[in-house]
Image 1 (tube, one colour):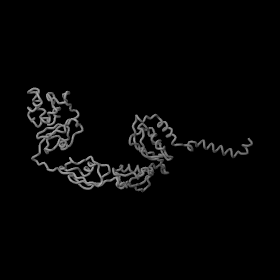
Image 2: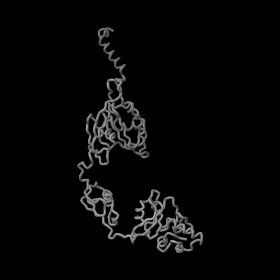
Image 3: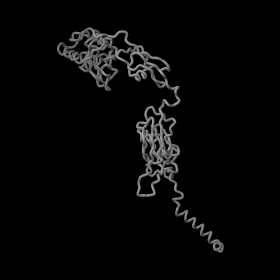
Length: 396
């Protein structure tokens, strides 16, 4: 007691400091990341069978220690991804973030920074800055953003990047300052000139000339870049799948002779094409050329049921089948039985369309079954030219 009386001032000072620490414990030892770390430890250490789950690509920005792109298991939560990115910084504001929220593919997670409001508490708005973005963004211009916004936020406000944008030298996490100007360069402005080819295309092409092409592209890419071929182009000798070579010249040849109108034939096209109808085509056309004239096939077309080797002849009626078309076949030899096939099946035969197919059915109703496949030539409209096309596919 004598000691305490002599050192009364020192004892009271120690007691006061202890009381100050106890009453301000939450303020002094507040760790904002404790809640995140505790929660994330529970989630990220849970049993994850990566063989049974997919992976998502996540872009995490803002107040994390290692912002960037991460490929993570698809069953993680936002809190897990933040932990993968090194956790939050001392300035992070996680009050508005749902750490338990499930992630989605191509998700952008932005951990905001604690914003300072004006001293006048009646003013609710946060500090704004004015910045300009130029170059390869969808909508370049001047934008008003919140203080401490980053380049990635500015790009998003400008509608995102164009296909020609080169962001290899752009820091998406850079914090913007007031009146800053950000320029997104084009890929062509980089030093990778060795990855670009200079090639020439001429001949039967809509826009012949010299083109700059990316390395690794093929001849058909160049043809498309030049606007496509003309009506007289002969692509039979052109290797469209070949890779382009720097400095080469590609010539699209012309047919040796143009088919005049006296050598045109009329054919009828039905079924799964975009524009069915009657077409006047050169007699040298293949079925592929005819389908191309008709705008191509529909999404319901079954290409496996088409006989691409048939020869088009005057008056031919072609039917392009769908997936729903059922072919009645003789299971012993795999041929269509013309004595029991319905109209939709008959139309799948080369040269047999809706009209002739109905004539076959009418013939059967009047005269009975066909005794041989040659008897099909007794049907009106089926001559030897059509018989030659179908004889390999039919039976009785």
